[in-house]
Length: 93
Image (cartoon, rainbow, N blue to C red; front, side, top):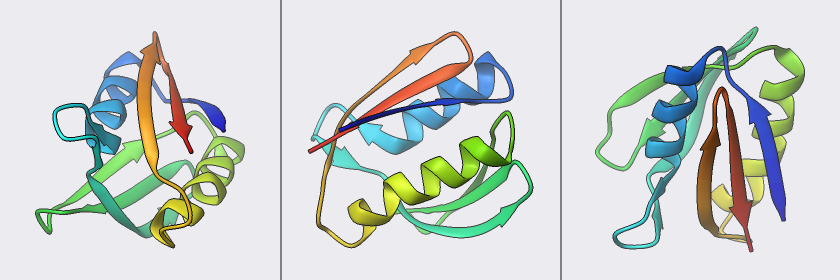
């Protein structure tokens, strides 16, 4: 399954892609969603830090939260992430 979300800008897309998936050990670095405020998503990482990701709008945030829920529940696993300017494509299986 794939999802493509639009971030606020190219920097946010690169930041999100680097946080969501670690290519070296095929692991998901994001462990939980701490908060959603309009188009901002605050996530917790495995190292216990928190980071903010700015998406283009509320619809992108809602789609991403829904997409990631099964990953947090260990029903699916992130297997890839790629950036396309200000967009990030996330792949899970």
